[in-house]
Length: 222
Image 1 (cartoon, one colour):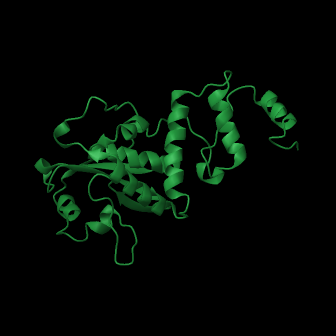
Image 2: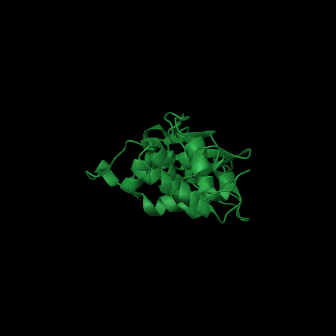
Image 3: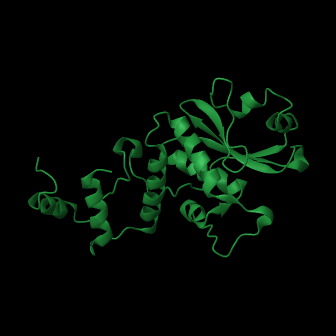
């Protein structure tokens, strides 16, 4: 983050006239994680691959639904901050990061053993630049071909002996699409990737603040 961005953040955190909403604080938290993990990656699909690895390492699976008292399921950010979850939560976690990158077309596949799947499990498939890709932070993480290309459900299922192939053949899944916002849609900064940092929108007194910063030499006048 450049010095001007750091100044904006410092100002917003310390100025009594400007308060970040809960949604804004959560967005900055999530954006900071994503920037740290993906700033060196250009391909958006591989940014999501990196975030899938990060979620797999940092949000641990809870077996038997025995969540600690500290677990907070309120939002995407609070689930990640709690550090625990399951395949369902992890599916929405990775879809949330995809939305922050501008990729909103996704589906969540809930596979059920009683419907013919090999076991109970949930994972996400996200469309990135016209290609559907499986991302599963909880268990499988993702699937690649021999050349390292990330695969979709349809491509994986061509191997009818694979876990997904068996589930697809037996129609052992239920599909849902964007059943809840991830992250909250009421707060969204334009084009996070172009800004290259957790971009802070000044919420009030923007003209006065800009004049003050010019006078203090933090930014130059146009």
